[in-house]
Image (cartoon, rainbow, N blue to C red):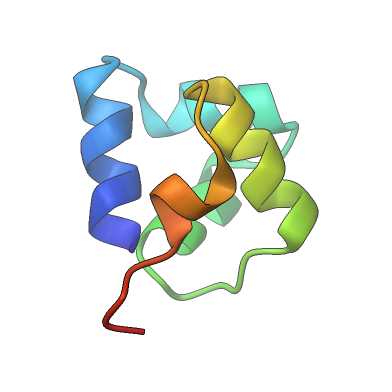
Length: 65
């Protein structure tokens, strides 16, 4: 799940700082989300999906989970 998020971010050439800015959180906080060290709220998942013009399930759901 988080690998997919990192891959999408890099594909769009966004930095961790860019994502943090879009989400109005600190770069450290975003990095922790991307590295699976901090849980994601549903609203954050929606906001992240919106940045990538996707649905949250397309980024954060895998059939293995």
